[in-house]
Amino acid sequence: ILTDSDGASSLTYVDVLPRLKQLTLESDPPGLQLALDGQPYTSPIYSTTVEGVQRYITAPKTQTVGNKTYKLDDWSDGGKHTHVVSPKKDVVYTAVYLELAIVPTISPAPTPTPPA
Image (cartoon, rainbow, N blue to C red; front, side, top):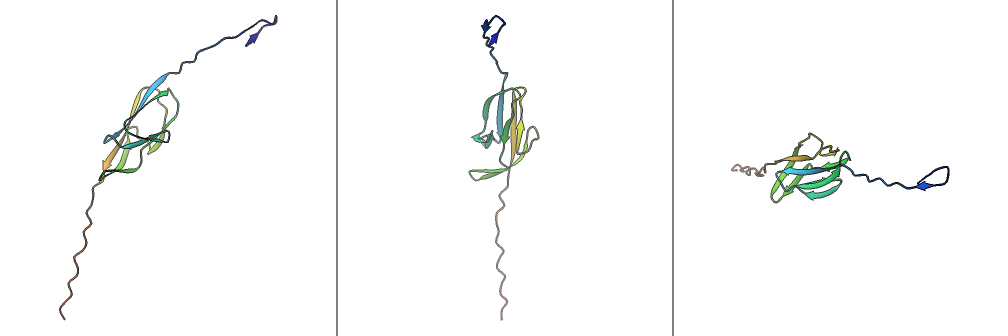
């Protein structure tokens, strides 16, 4: 509220319209768990965000789906498994995983007992 020397006052309103951007998190392979701002989701994740606002993205270092285990190889932007992004444009970040090979466990053959 502004008041002049004669006591007259006025009130002014201003609408602030933030610039919105689309933030997308994907995994390769699709459907793995990722987190946005600490909340877990199944990928892909679509979020509208205010331009330049810090968001925390996380890809677990390993995760198992069914009988397959995956290890995080890299984020598409080269960030660590958890890192901060501040989108200034519509952007897609992809967590790339490698499937870990299952190595069968082989028991050694019993040592034969020599005859007496």
